[in-house]
Length: 458
Image 1 (cartoon, helix red, strand yellow):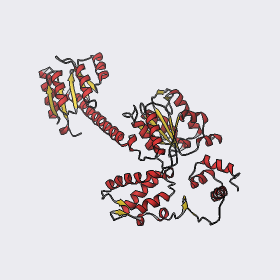
Image 2 (cartoon, helix red, strand yellow; image 1 turned 45 degrees about the vertical axis):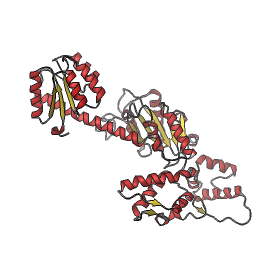
Image 3 (cartoon, rainbow, N blue to C red; image 1 turned 180 degrees about the horizontal axis):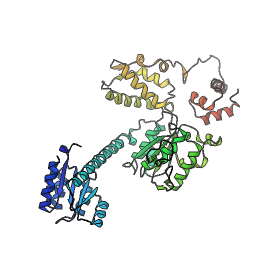
Image 4 (cartoon, rainbow, N blue to C red; image 1 turned 120 degrees about the horizontal axis):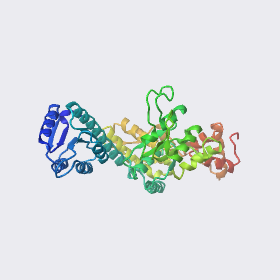
């Protein structure tokens, strides 16, 4: 903050000290308001925007303790510096407990007070910015911003509203692109922890050897490259929410330590022996079938039950096609504002194509497609010409597979068995890839394979 823009309120009943300090602060480039007592200072504080309050501890009409308490109620992010008698440790402790940023003892020199003010102003700036960002995050990620009116998405919104009232652990499942992090933020910013940190970590994006350092923190020298100490994501999320995305990708050894942290509510940084207490809500997410991974010893069963206290399954976009027009309108408005273009209209035929398309990438794929169409089009109306060929050429399809119905009757079960068999062959018997290709879950594929007595070798 530029000193010429910083405004300081100085409250002290000692006329001589007040005038000397006022002169020193003005000489250093600050704008200074003064008050002869606590009551006058509080009146000025309530009516003016000040960046720092400096107050004597002992004053008539209203003590420094009362001023600190009431000023903190009016504007909590404004730092307060208390002037105390020399060696008055108890007063200093009481001031800090009451909400003061720092204290200085009489007599003090000019450099000491200026350094304390500089630190206080930086703290005030950070506090104001954090509050602004939390407010914006709350506005952006409330439940009302989850787009759709389908029964499937209404069910999800109802589940979010219920779990947001408590600190219960939630496991969000669904295909890639269905909006798992958006739901996690909706839970956090609709609950009691909304003004506390929301910290996200993608377990699939961090190398196996570093994930514990990221989660739990480390001390300097704990491993090669640890040149300074660092707090982990758990400590960063203290009193807030930690979102563990792609939890299925966490190594088994790290799963064991994570389970211990969840049970004990404390973390120990790498290289240290002393645990640190934490208060964190956990929301995890995955696009994998965790029970299936448990069967293959790829995920801890006890950790699964610890995480899946309340499971929320997000529907694929093809399972809530009636929401596509609402999502399209939302993304058009978003990207028209982003790219400073006029909001275009969209032809009905485009929606007909969208209704036939499989949307394997779900809402994320639709969002990217709308931005691409808007940016590349020069017209005020988006037409079929703006739709990419792979989306437009769906023809008479099931998903994106062309077929023609014969005139004679068909056996639907034989038809389904043939499609699944061909899909398995196409992907070398890999069940996860086949399920993704067919637009169903892996467990649904396994059920159908058992139903039709199919194996990956058929």
